[in-house]
Amino acid sequence: MTVKLLPLIQQQFGLQLIETSSPLVEPQPFSPSSGRRSLVEQGVEMVFPHSNERTRSEFIVAQVMIGIALAHPVSYFSGYPFEVDPALGLVGQCDYLFSRSSLTFRIHPPVALIVEVKRDLGRCLPHCLVELAAAQRFNGSTAPVYGVLTTGLAWQFLKLEGEIATIESTIYKVESLDRIESILAAMVSEP
Amino acid sequence: MPLFLITSLYDEGISPNLVRVVEAESALAVAAHMLHHSDSWGYFLYRSFGQDLPLGILTPEELLERINRTYIDGDSTAQLRITPLVVQSLEAIVTTPLFQPGALFSDFG
Image 1 (cartoon, each protein chain N blue to C red):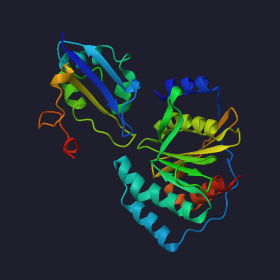
Image 2 (image 1 turned 135 degrees about the horizontal axis):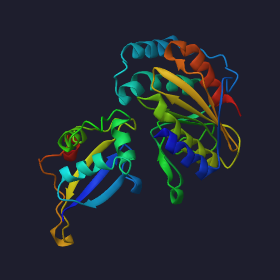
Image 3 (image 1 turned 30 degrees about the vertical axis):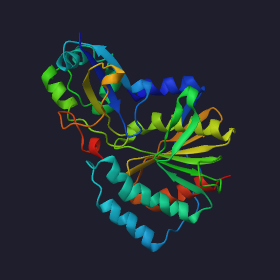
């Protein structure tokens, strides 16, 4: 079904989708507090391949995102309404969203990073791509907007810049948490 | 002919893309149609079952049973339901929930 959805989205937004083995950003040094790291590690022990989405989100993804949010001058939104263009149906709730704006009472541009959590990594891409296209429109800029596809246990990264959506082919296992967090830190920091 | 509301819901709620109203003899007839026209119903089935539905093996009864066991898991799996519709006059509307087949805990809270 993803095969059917992607062309639909690409056509709607005029996007070209390319895959690369190169990192999308230069990873940035990132050191969460020992308490935060411990929470993530304990969360990983409580998530299994059959775990539902909420368990994955609460025990792993949210803990990682809070760590990133606390360490950067960003606004962090979890499950917040994101209304971009109701006439086009560009409305919904992103699982996690980071804006570089300091305003927190609602989502303000520029949106930097959107995270899509699903039990099946292969089903994240169309959903996240629509969210990134909406964010680009919301930002009123062709500057990069980053996407994260994750099951909690596996992580993959995406970038939309102008009309080019680039997905990094590498799938990072949660055991590479240092690397994952360094990439996330770079994505929310990059102007 | 009775009316049925077919819904495929994530936690974000309803959109026009996720509901259909059909005329059918029964919920079982809708399930049978899903089996015989799986391309037409493909996206709804995919959102609830992924690629795991053994369409060539299932009977309509078995599919309906599986449909009634689907539940919303965030936006990973959708709750699929075939709900009989009763058209009422505005004067007859009552929205107090009832304990009935298909009801949920959250209907009462």
